[in-house]
Length: 407
Figure 1 (tube, rainbow, N blue to C red):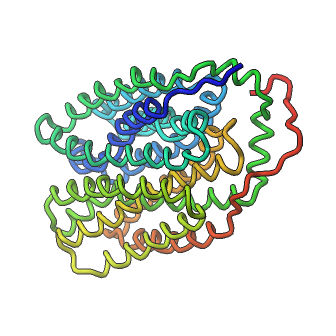
Figure 2: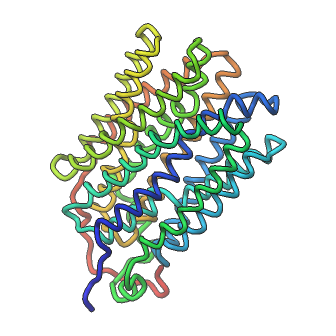
Figure 3: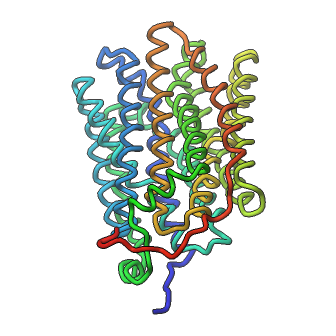
């Protein structure tokens, strides 16, 4: 049977638009921290806990979403994710208690993100785009998520100003449903026939193989740190800057700058991954993040210093995503790429849970974010060190044994 592929342009356009919506909306959630907690009389920890639950649910459920996408294709998963995303945003707007808010903003939106973001889209890219262009293509998709932040964060700030925080969430709930029609562009031709014809590892065999590979464990360790750093900064920096006496517009502009500069950063990381050792790219990103935070904390705080920090962090923000996922595909192949990418991302989301929750908890206990800033610095150094020993060569296997009913 002649292998049919979707065109690279179609895959990247539809995948990029999906990631722009799914990632762009979530990057702006920090803008709701103060108006929402003030309206309900909640402490910041309540909002932070819901965001932490969201990130943990995203990580846990991402594994299952990846398995389903690898077995039955991404289309159904993307549609289900779009519907859950809309329901979660409505729930954020209407929740009357911190518990309901944690279930909607946390569990529902976490499940939605599991089905609408990188692990699912990268599975299609891995199967539909040839290996020599794969890292570049993943960089393009990640850059789209960054452009989504640049586009969506100011839009979300504007919606809050014009409609109020509740109606702004309802407007986004309508917008996110566009992911469903866009998923049509990622329906892979002959997906089921091609999968049935190819000798494939069972899920558990693939998982045991990955978890027994030192490089996979090191990759997961580094990705924990990525989640800790970016989610702490993304959620808590607006409040940190307001506490320091800066105008709310400074935070909105900073988050938008992170998204803008990350368009270049993620594209560059993906392109460089075709030429340079991906482990060295990752180690450099983590080390430079720690340096950037140290400089930011020790420089006199002003809008200019915030924008400079945002630009540098933007270059490093999601630039870990293309080399990390390209390494998984390079080492283990693409048959279980969404599932294995989901496992690596689970580690990222455990880090996200820790970063966002500790940010709220330690602020409420100490009145300061200083401890968490220095934790982010130390972890960045650790991540740089653990990525260097990763072996990038494809895993050498014997003949593939197909388990009965393998999925």
